[in-house]
Image 1: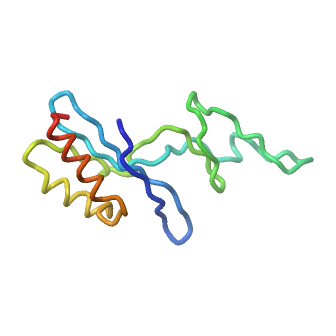
Image 2: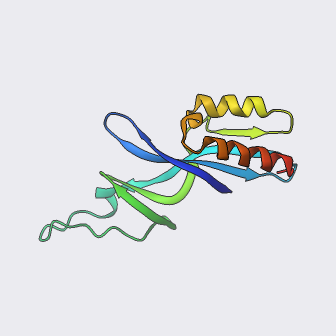
Image 3: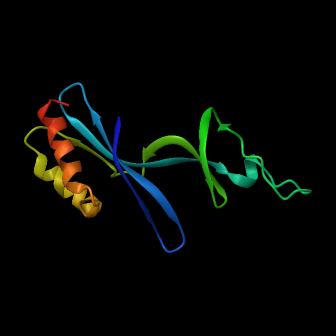
Length: 129
């Protein structure tokens, strides 16, 4: 799986990174997905604050997955997972229009490098995944 681009997104109270990924499938199709770092744990549950120093010792791994970062009271692994149930789109030859609509609905057409991203997607499909 290749990461084509990233962006920071969020809400009024939170921010996070999303990644546009491309995976070439053996049947010649291309799978696009929008992914983010997987939630691993609540910070207090895996590394309580040291009462004397007020600091935390965040572990290098949780449940066998490397820790990417702590953000607020949450810890995220290095594993990229789809951000929601509709964050994966399988593209087959002849269906470029549907892929573009999917990208536009998810706001990737506003990415500053969208023209290059779109060209990469088209090229991957031309090469047969």
